[in-house]
Amino acid sequence: MREVDRVEYAVRPVPDPAEEDPLFIQAVARALQVLSTFHGASNALTLNEIASRSGIGKSTVQRIVHTLRQQGYMERAPDDRGYVPGIRLLDHTLDYLRLNPVIVRVLPTLVELRRDTGERVDLSLRDDLRLVYALRLQSKRESYFATLIGNSVPLYCTAGGRALLSQLSDDEVDDILARSNRQPFTPRTLTDLKEIRAKVVMARENGYAIAAEEVLQGEVVLGVAVKDNDSRPIGAIHIGGSLSEWDKDSFVSNFAPLAMTAAGKINRA
Amino acid sequence: MREVDRVEYAVRPVPDPAEEDPLFIQAVARALQVLSTFHGASNALTLNEIASRSGIGKSTVQRIVHTLRQQGYMERAPDDRGYVPGIRLLDHTLDYLRLNPVIVRVLPTLVELRRDTGERVDLSLRDDLRLVYALRLQSKRESYFATLIGNSVPLYCTAGGRALLSQLSDDEVDDILARSNRQPFTPRTLTDLKEIRAKVVMARENGYAIAAEEVLQGEVVLGVAVKDNDSRPIGAIHIGGSLSEWDKDSFVSNFAPLAMTAAGKINRA
DNA sequence: GACAGGTGTATCGAAAGACGATACCAAAGT
DNA sequence: ACTTTGGTATCGTCTTTCGATACACCTGTC
Image (cartoon, rainbow over all chains, first blue to last red; front, side, top):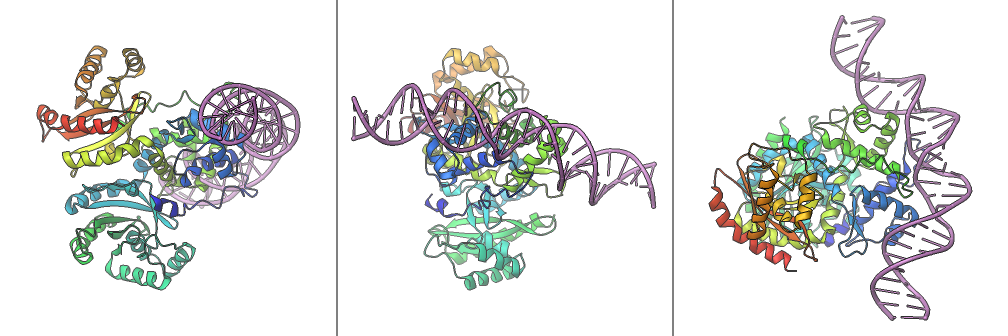
């Protein structure tokens, strides 16, 4: 779970400016900011911690937490020390998944793909510089926290990310890469711009992309892009396997065709 | 997905009272209410729809949506007609899962159970009258929307719900049953108080509970309770199978022991 | 081609209500 | 007993939110 800390959460420029935006509601942004404080946390947070980490005054935090708690979006930590996010958040997770046409469209194909491959498959959607996992169908053996929904990974060093980039113009790719802070997750993470661009070009030719151990040790991932109705790329499908069972080449030759077929089904809509 | 509409979303008494609560922040509650409008929706909502359904003025909705959108919690619908929940919500989903000690504790055991049974297993947590699915490890074949994270089901007519109820006092059970609005999901849904209480008593004796086709046609589910450190029940584990592959009795005799073992591992902490 | 219906955007003044400082209480650790 | 830290409560000022109203735009219809 260490890696989680490494992902830039695409935190909007900090909700503080609001520079003369007459439609902007501070109170709401602050409440969301309070909830977002947990992004960096590894355990429950006390009021004071929330206040100091978010830069919001203690009283305000108190009232925001009070309100969020009343609505079920925050809970007291079980040991009565600090607070954690509340279960009510999951209701909105479901809404997001249910009402997202891409997810609705992809899910059946993803289940097929999971059946045909026997490996972990997932769908992630783009949020600026990152991919956020929206659907994850685990393989039999493994299931870490890194495989939970909501986890996110950068575009530049993931199979799906590069598959997605390969469907954008070079200018867009350059912009994204320039803005990404390329901190290696593992010794194998590619951070050199030239190398990354080469991978993107390869992906553009092949229709899929590969990343081996760039995020997690011992893991090989194949990714294909998912497009919207205007055939703009908006996410990616991953097939993920373990290098203890596969060597990279046979993994690719086994699953690339399946992944491409799946992508075909999804994108020809 | 029809069933989704049927679950009472435990909507807090409507955030309108705020009766003299000096800590209550209206703006925040209203924003959450706007997001909650989607609970009843089956597609994107326009500003006017949100306004009318939530009872909030159009201008206010406009500003709330503006703010939420700016932060990524709402998005324009892909066809440019109305809005949908935003991907940023998933960040909080992950926080919820990561920071919830129960989930952290249960996940490894759940993976084992998934491996040993080959069926769908999941963990759901209680929110008053309902169980909210927090972790779902799908079986190979199926994956409907009903099996997504965040979906919720009533306590009274589910295996896990009854297993949970069986760990509460009779008074608490009566209270919960009385407050549940017991609308049948299928012809097989038990709604009679006596019958439900009998099932709960059985669960108390067996240590597990069964529900067959009470929520979904053709589905049999076995549930055991999950307890916190004070051995109060807080959730349940489900093993779910299809009646086209199992008859109820063999399903139970196969999986009850495994479920009990898993529950033992989890609850003896 | 004008019109009607609906969606999203912009503006503004009044007054509601959110803000932070401060003080208080309880529990846990020293 | 004393200090520290977490959570709660109170209050007056002035920032901010609220809803009414009006505007711009697109779609489809007559």
